[in-house]
Length: 470
Image 1 (cartoon, rainbow, N blue to C red):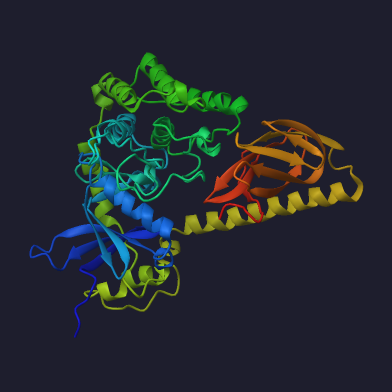
Image 2: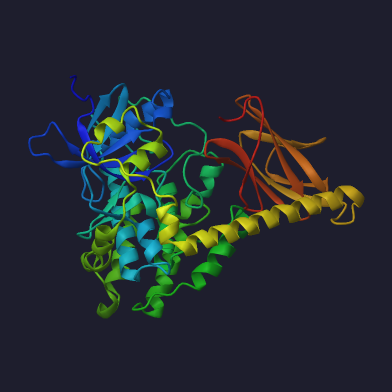
């Protein structure tokens, strides 16, 4: 019988992303039977050139990043034509998972320390990592967020997932496309404008992450410059941190305000942000200064031990990857799948919340549809005209009916259903439909690689066109 071409025994699925899954695996060809983490592309992307290029570039970048706060990469192997990234196994949880069990945030000293260590990692990636040619690689992560920060059971912070990172190094295969990739609301405003990436985009994300880890919820900042700072001030004014003096708390607010500044030139460097966080931690009342080691021992380790992994065969089915992963599952007998989702069984409140959220969303859609119908019927539900503010990249021009804009600005338009046409310098033309109301702000965004618009900072509304981003 032919040997199994997959040199791992998959033990657990740690998580799933847009392009692949990260698994705990035992190396079957290693006499020590070591356990590692492996990142496997989903079958549907196995032949996608861009995804394959980014995977290989990620391996090249991370293989040069040797630092305690960055997850280590051991090797990149190819199995049946598909790249498999072999990484160090971090026994711990990402901060997003920890926040699910700490909905009001973690202690201030813990939140500041994990972000401080993340800033150290960002500084190393951009300033100190050197490529084969001896030049700095200038690595920018571009997707810093709590779910990409792992805290080990021993209290060490690891930055993970450099899948959409950019850098300057020899042998690079993929190019930095103009499309926006990342996770809202952690994305810096300039990324939505498709401006060149700078280290400031990671600092913005780190500041947003710091606020979330401290409070348990995201700071919903506006994407419009006129209201961005006002919204941030309102949220930071309500920020509290037991154990910090009033003066130190003001310093922390100022630091987050600088890290999340709309203008990237006002943001501190990763080194300076990390140093300021270290100073603030040292200034805290010792009774409230909790170390990462103590937090990990009391919180992370019990959660890690009690975690309930997704059954392997369920995960493989969900990943639709019978070709590669099924053969790697040896020691786990098949079980009859439960009649109802174990996640819903364990968390009925989450299920009910989802039901009520769906009902609320449907109600909002119905109300919006009714508003449009009233408008079309007699024009009395909304004003006859509406001044609408438009935000779009510098390499585009906008047109709404006979009215056009060469730069972001406002137009007086008839109220109701409206189409925005955007023409880009690269020849692309797209059409985006929205509903014009007085005071509406419409901004072009790229959502999961697709052209879209956001109305009043709301969810992305897909655009269409023969040359739209795919």
